[in-house]
Amino acid sequence: MVGMEKTRSQTIVKSGCLFIITNFLLAIFNILVGLLSNSLAIISDALHSLIDGIAGLLVIISEKLANHKKLNAKREAIERTTTILIALIIIATGIHIIVESIESLSETEAPDYSVATIIVLIASILAKYTLAFYLKKTGQRIKSKVVEASGAETLNDAWISIVVLASAIIYLIWQIDVEAYVSILIAIVIIIVGLEFIFPHISHHHHHHLESDPDHDHCGKF
Image 1 (tube, rainbow, N blue to C red):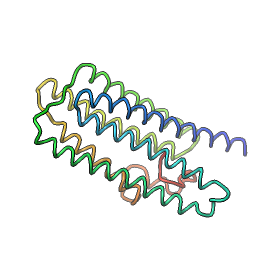
Image 2: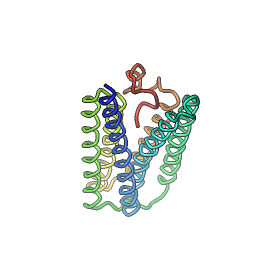
Image 3: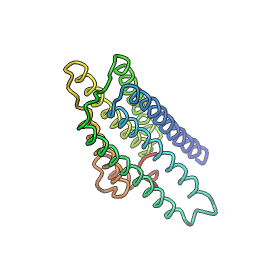
């Protein structure tokens, strides 16, 4: 039984690391593409991936600290502090994107999309869908709501990337720039995610059914 629990724990950690690494790689790649194409929406999407990666990393670090013998008594305080730190980073990023987006509305510089940009966005979406599928199936197999929740979060990210892709296609076909509005939409999603870390009960997709799960002793995902 102990061996099974250890294997399950290792699978959860492996899934968490994959979630973090994938989000960091997507963030770096999309930031470069966003800068090259002068696309605020792609950069905003990249920041969303970066936030997920940072949040996942902070949660795992706090979990390791909390499980340390000397710090176990302070587990709750560590988790609460980590949660607030994550939330503040997320909310601040969302507000920054909104400010940048509003400022960009008065600018005349248009994004410079290309076929390569579209291909990169499609690749990013496929990567997110693949990761979401893996996390969902792994979560179901080992009965871990935390892993499943990470899959749900990744699927949400994929939908945001689809919206960014749609805005790029709209610009390429009709020369209509909806970038700033898409970025504001992404920023609102990011701020809601940040608020969910502080007020889990406002979540509408997975927090409510995690509360009774034995895995859910931190922020609801990696």
